[in-house]
Each structure stands twice: as C-alpha cells, then as structure tokens.
Image (cartoon, rainbow, N blue to C red; front, top):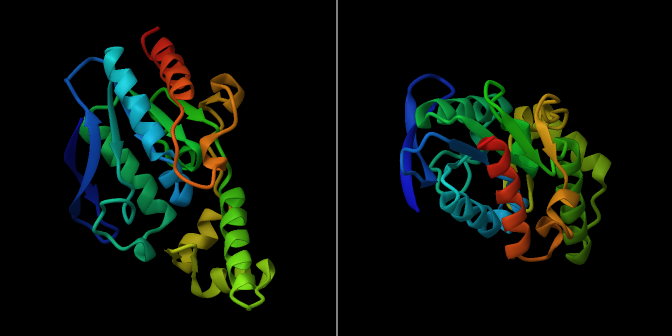
Length: 224
C-alpha cells in the first residue's frame, strides 16, 4: 500500500494536491473507493483498508482518495460544498483511470455516475446529519446546556455549524441535507456482508469476516 498524490480541482479554478491510499499495480481492474463520511469514516477506515488489501490479493487495484477537507487534506472542511466533493471524486476517478467505483455508507452520496458502481450500506445525508445533531445535543446536555435539534438545524442552514468536531458551512449543510445516493448504483446491503455494521460501534474496529465478504462480492462483480 502506498500514498499517491492526485490533482483535485479548487472551487475558484486551479488544482491542489490531495492524497489517496492505493494498492496500485497498474492492473486492468481499478476500483475507486469513496469513503464513509465524518465519524463513520474514522470507524470504517481500518475495515476499508483491509478490503483493499484483500482485493489486491484478488488481482484488483484499489484507490481510496481523501475528500477535500478530510483526513490528510490541507483544504479547510468549512470551505467545502456538496459540489466540490462531487467534482473531487470525478477528478480522482479520471486521474487514476478507475474502471469501477465502490461507495461506502455516506461515500455513496458522492460516487461518480459514469462507471459501474456499487454502494455498500448506502445512507441518506439527512440520516447522517440526524446522528451528528443527536451527538451534539447529548454532549451539550452533559455539559449543562440544552440545545434542540430544530434550533440547531435552523442555525446550521443560516450560519453553518460545528458537529462533533466537523465545521460545516451553511451552503454545505443546506445542500447536503437533501442529498441522496444515486439510484442506479448496485446496492450491497449489510445482510450481504453479515453481522451488524462496524459504524454502529463506539470506537473504530475491524472484522475480518465482513471485510472478506465485501471484497469477495466486489471481486466477483468486477471480474465478471
């Protein structure tokens, strides 16, 4: 596994260098993976890399780019928009010569629509925001403050908001809350992988059986 740079478009023109984890041997099958978002991205990082390692053993290259403002990105998250994330993943797919795409959880909201695509446990943006808002209200209550979800949503749409450490601009929030996964992708349900999803756990974790099941499903489809 190596880290590769790729040219990510900037909102006002030009490009900046972002990073992608990669198992890249210049093989015919090349899978772009759009990662889970925010806290779920942290919880599923080890699982995602293990899937990539298994795919490498099955003869498939895989590439896991950073969304601008996330992981090793030097761009501020607060300056991102739904459009910039869509453009970034399209640019990554083109730069790396992807032949297939896998979206994981919230990453399914930003998969390029020009390639054969699978969505693992896809989730609507509204559901992601509900979880993040709930986490904030619980943290506020523990600190002796009362915040309602309705009040926070109104403030987020007007001025932006920070949720569990992630600063989201108002324009991002307004566009994101209505974003849904593309309907033409091939879904992979959690039942197809087995057991409860790792994003439900309190801390980042891994599951070798689930990783093998997902990698096997993807390999069977990509190599068909």
